[in-house]
Length: 114
Ligand code: 5GP
Image (cartoon, rainbow, N blue to C red; front, side, top):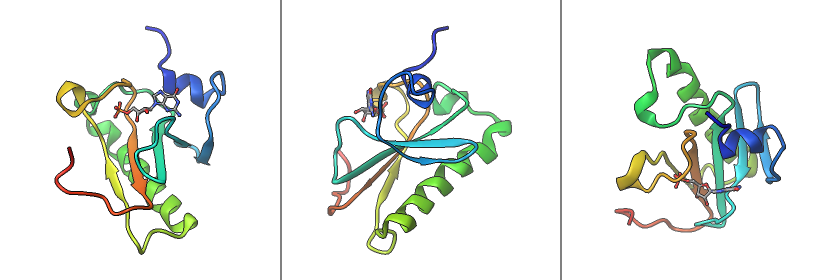
């Protein structure tokens, strides 16, 4: 299988505004932001969808959430609030098949989501 778009961003083969990096996770700004802050947190290990997760990925998924929370604290909007979202497959509108946690912030976010 060819490398995912996000693997190519992680490898710097495709440009992106990378705002967070650790050993396991890379965060970069969404190309089509839905809020003033819209960052995608992506594992360096490519996994297509949440349906492909196993027990062995429990720590990695936790790391995605921790990375988003650390970024929110670092950027100063943690107390004000933010939303994190994983889209899975067609009904949720997943368009890139390399799991990613959306972090949205910087405006009041409606609920329920569209
Ligand atoms: P999904 O719909 O799969 O949950 O989210 C994929 C996200 O990736 C979308 O919000 C879309 O705007 C973003 N995206 C798609 N292609 C690119 C790209 O080339 N660069 C960046 N930075 N984001 C992208």
